[in-house]
Length: 143
Image 1 (cartoon, one colour):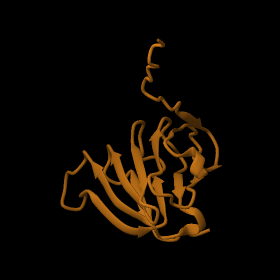
Image 2 (cartoon, one colour):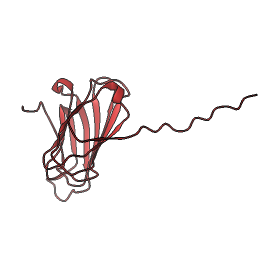
Image 3 (cartoon, helix red, strand yellow):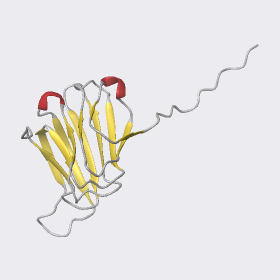
Image 4 (cartoon, one colour):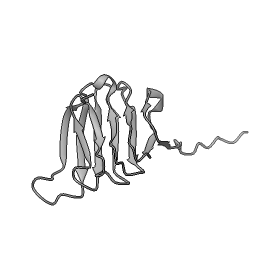
């Protein structure tokens, strides 16, 4: 009689990004460490139910890191939470129908992060930052 096969937890190796990248649905489940002081743009694939990505600042940018939806579709919905609420003008942020996420130049710090998960129509966003305006979300980006 053979022994049952034990299956351990599946570990997906994180990727360190140092330049622009266009993701596909096959990249789902990965964590990306953003690691270039000059910043760059990452393009999300079209939403597929259950797909998701995590982005973490590894090197604080002097030029923004931008995560943009494919075709600049306004399908980012969610919140950005911060530990730096020190006035009525610096609250957590809620967004709906945006097309990009920026880790702001000279403001985002190591450890700031964004998690995305899709229901097949939208990308749902949970962002976490140390400085209240370190992560910005916006409508169709300017060229």
